Image (cartoon, rainbow, N blue to C red; front, side, top):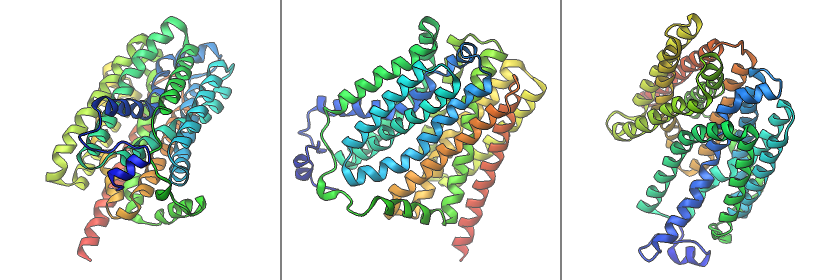
Length: 416
């Protein structure tokens, strides 16, 4: 870590008592906005998806592909922005990303077909992921010790709050002004974040920037993919993420179109899952020291598999109506706190010198896997919740198998 003097010379904010309280909150507000772009970019317009389908004369499956398009850009962009910022600093890549986000949002707002929206969503995602990935790097640049942990914890909490509020606010905007107003709102938010970014200093001094070619970073990613434990942990999280994005793509039509839930109330059902995620994250933080991340990961994926199978049965036979769909979905989504954090931490555990590269790689794999989940739901859409149900069930089973593979591999390593 750089000294406080180095941080000051770079225009940074040192982690000391002399740092003004208001200045710390200013930094937190800007980084929180950057961190939240992943959630608001999708969760904002979920309640409006049925309306988009009607106005654009498209079927549910086509509109669901707008989420897959976003995930393509978001997963690939993570690998690119991380390497770029290590070489050229944080502010320029984030600024470029926000400009791309604004352009992509404008494109979505003026689109006349679903195909156009899908293409603009890819560009929007390439921009959005810059703020998400680099906000963590900025925290590491600015703060150290307990202050860094506090800042990161706060930012993660924002990640949970954003998807809780996104569908609720998006549903209200769509009800009063139509679905295009949601994307214009994202344009405004992107411009505000860009203006706020210029009030922050550059946090990576020139002497700490990488001088090797950008291609060397991508070669490191390829090497990491040869490690079985990384693949096992990444697989457990990736299959779970795939099920999560099947849930995100499928529930607007399952709840609003099939079960006739008013669009403005969709956010309440969606928000229940977010509350479950927050609760399991808190439980995981307390239990992981006692039981170990592998055991909790295995338990979480087992619960995901069971709830996915129940969901598939209920959705196929239409058992329990809306509640028969909602309750197993709630159970599946809630175990996020047991699966995601432990899979990422496990992947990085044996590679402390490459933690940043492993983190970016695992994140790209997990978000990239969402393409499969949301894409399958879109491709197999038949007007019922059944495609979503079976996709989530299959992904839950695969996630549990990957967790079992990790545990068996770890056991063999200890024996040897």
